[in-house]
Image (tube, rainbow, N blue to C red; front, top):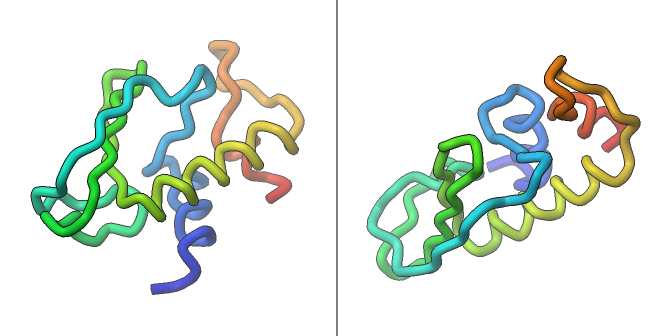
Length: 101
């Protein structure tokens, strides 16, 4: 697979991997059960730790540990280093957060 951080940034820019502007929501951690990771698209096996995040947008996303760390890094860079552009509802768009990455 290509560089994980670049893959995650591309998914965020395409709108297939969300960056919630109001925080990550609730987080649960457990053993994987074969569900697909929302960052790398690979299965989260029973040998892996699965990170499940319920977003305030009524969507749940799942990650491997390294993918969660890369997603958080992309969120931090995107939210801290880009000018504010909104989607019409006062929420900053993912494309605007990633523009300067």
